[in-house]
Length: 415
Ligand SMILES: *Cc1c(COP(=O)(O)O)cnc(C)c1O
Image 1 (cartoon, rainbow, N blue to C red):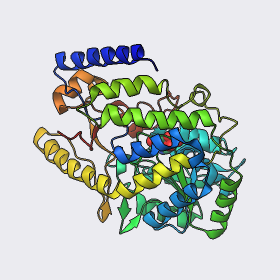
Image 2 (cartoon, helix red, strand yellow):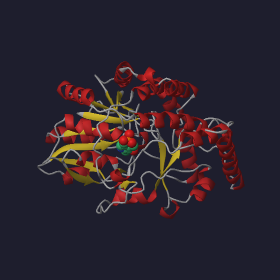
Image 3 (cartoon, rainbow, N blue to C red):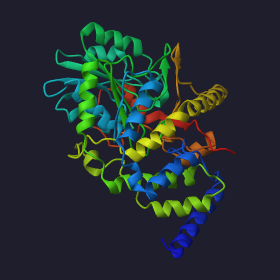
Image 4 (cartoon, protein in one colour):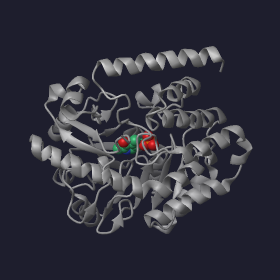
C-alpha cells in the first residue's frame, strides 16, 4: 500500500465523515458488526498476519473448542468455518438425510435452509410467534408429518424463545430430534442452563454480526456421546479454509476494529478499510441461489480459533453490557409506546440486538430510524430466508415480522 493510496483513503474517509455530520448523524454510530473487538484481538490478528507459521498448530483449535465447551457447560464442542457448516455437521452427525423432514422457522437466514437441504432432507416451514420471534409450537404441531425427524428451533436476537419448553416437550412426546439455532444467543440461559444444551444438537456462530466474533466461524455440539463422536470425526476430516480467505478475515478484523471501535481514529479506520480490500465472503452468489458450496464442511482456521478464545473470555462481560442497554431500550419503549420483546420467565437473554415492531413503511427508512431512535436500526430479517426473497406463503406472523421487525444495537460506541 503506497502513501498515495493511504492519502486517498484518508480523503475518502473525511468525505464520509462530512456527510454524516451534514445529515446530523453521529460520526461513529453503533455498528452491526464487530462491536466486541478490542486492541487485544487486533494484536492477535497482526501477529498471525506477520507470522502465518505461528498458526500452524491444532492446539489453538482444541483450546477454543474445550474453552467453548467449558464456558457453555457442554461435554464437548467442535469448531467449523461458519455457523451454517456447524449446522450441517450437526445434522449429518444425527444421521439426517434423504427421506427425512426438518421443521424450521419461516423467519431465518437463507444459510439455515441451505444447510438443511444439503443433507438431502426435505424442509417443512412453520410460523413464528411475535414475542421472541421463535417457532410457534401450535403451528409446529399442525405441520408435523410421519416423516418429520427434526425440529430446528431458534433463539434469535439473544432471546430465549417463548415456546422453548413446549417445543422440547412436543419433540420428546413425538420421538423427534431437536436442533437449536443459537447463532444469535451465545451465553443465553434458561433455568440456569445454556441454550443448546437441552437439544440433541446445537450450533453457534462467530460471524462478525454475532455475539462474539472471529469474522467467520461456528461451533457445533451434541448431547449424545455417540453423536459427539461423529462430530469429532467430521471435524477431524474437515478440509481447511484456504490461506487467502484466512488472511482476508484477519485483515477484515483489523479494519473493523478501527472503523467501529476506535471513534477517535477515523483516519486509521479509513486506511485499514482500504488496506483490507474486498474482505472475506459472508454469503456467496451460489448460496443466495440455494446451493451448497462443494468445499463446505471446513474446520475453523487456527488463527481465527485463537481470536475465538480471546473473544470468549470477554463474552460474558459484553453480554452484560448488552443487557444493560436493553434495559434502557425497555424504558425507551415504555415511554414511546412500543411493545417490548418478551424475556421468558427464568431466562437470561443476551440481546445481540433489541427487536421492535414498527410500521411497515418505516422498516427500511434509515432517516426515520435515526430520527426516532438516534441510531440506525437493523432490518433482520428482510424476508423469510434473509436476505434472499422467498416464495413462502401461509405464515402470517412471519410475514408480519418480515414487514415490521427492526432491531436496535445493544453495544453502543463509547462516548
Ligand atoms: C448468522 C445466522 C446463522 C448462520 O451463521 P453463519 O456463521 O453466518 O453461517 C444461522 N442462523 C441465524 C438465525 C443466523 O442469523
